[in-house]
Image (cartoon, rainbow over all chains, first blue to last red; front, side):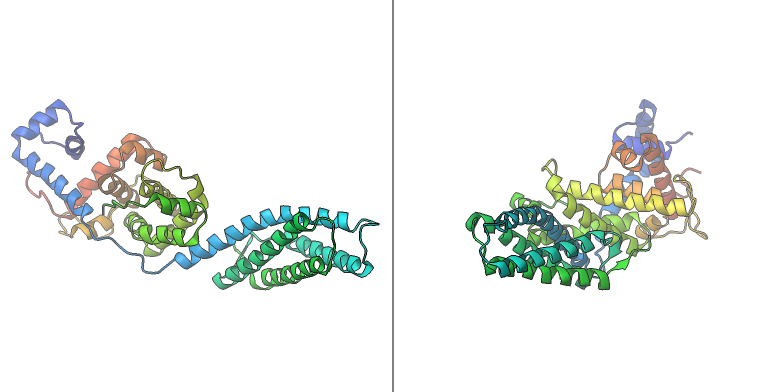
Length: 194
Length: 178
């Protein structure tokens, strides 16, 4: 006697079986048992206990979240910085600035900041990996730089025609943070061997 | 394992806005089902952990693109299944094994009377993935074929061969058709 194949049994389970298979399984006790076994196996598979991850990987995901968020903020910050730089250019134009020393200090801080930005741009950030701790440190520094960039961008809205020591201080803080960021990136990152 | 996990819309919205606490809440809600799916599909526990990590890195990166079509678990599960299948394909390419090769572990024979969980582990990577996705997760053969880059009939035949092998490994039906 010809019995159902496994294809037939699975088709019966899916409600897609041939007329022959449907009729056969009604008459054949062996195939009905086989079909029941299929149902039982699937039910047992569904009832297998959930396997839980042996280690917590959230800290790695979280570090990636922070780096990504900082990068987004930095992208925004670069645009803000460009606006701030344009504003500074206006303020430092001949005739507008009243303090020669402030002018020189601001100019120097801007140059240093631009140099450090170039260094960071030329450094292959994506081709290197960071430990979780270093990634957190990078994220922290980038957050602080983003805050300063925001302050510099708002400067134009609050004091569009003035130039004072506070502006110079902000730029100097930015230079200091950029220097730390370059240091961390250069000394603590490693190339991925892919 | 059936997951019927409802996630509040507000939590998803917060995660989409980049709220770290909300992202962690999603991670905590889905880490076990994602790991379980990956572990059942993959032979190696470390690979399953890597899939868990890769899945959530993808979730974090793409959660803004999730538009609420279907359940969030369905969206996350698809990412996890894709990552696990990519890993299977990579391993098969390394080992130069054809995707549909049906090989059992050396020394295994029909009627070994293994329990189902152990018998399941003796299936090929591809068969295991098909059985889990179809029979447990409820994917259709069309969906599995699409995920694997294969045809519907490939998925169906893998499932039939896997069930036949499970039947043999479990020692079921011996002599019934003699």
